[in-house]
Image (cartoon, rainbow, N blue to C red):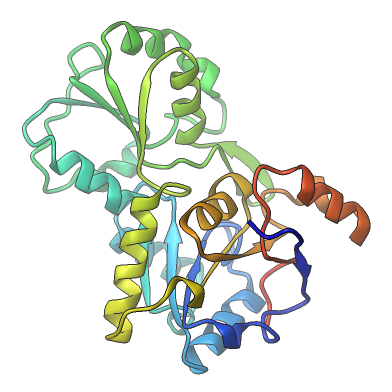
Length: 285
């Protein structure tokens, strides 16, 4: 982990060191409502300069769904080469349990995650394991809303596959809870959770394989830059995997960091579980 964090106003001074960029989506490329134009332009410039950009998301849906969503939001196609999601990793985990009945805890919009798999969905009381993609109503509920159900899963010793390790996400300026908050609550009760996305290694391995396929060559870890807005997932994942990280401060940690001076910001980084190599307000060239 770096001993200090270099503050930047844009990526231009450092991007020449890298061949592959693993970029978070929500909080960096868009806010769930509209794209960040400067971020999209910066990614397009990276690609024009020879850097391969793989978007890496903790979204609990297959990459094809996310590509459609990005198009609807207006994220330009020249901003990225490929997409990898925790949904893709979760599908692999579900496929390994072919034929086993599962309980899906999450909204119907995440059902594409299980499409085409031998994964019979049953009620909460019949599932052999749980696939959590989120809360049924993330506008009104919290992980606490599921305390009784989670306690029952613990009693039955069910494994919970968390298809989105994020705790919260910024939806147009409002923080709403994600599947990660349920998985953490489950672990606190003594349950066993498997996390499909960041900060865990499988999603980085898959993203790097995608990037190397695009480039037609292998890429050393020293030539990989991960960009994200969350310490717990994006920065921790990069540090643990051994690649450089760039943090966008105006994302999930905006309220904590927005009024800090450079010296105060350095103190804030020092107090976090993991420290990024670089930081800037929002991704820009």
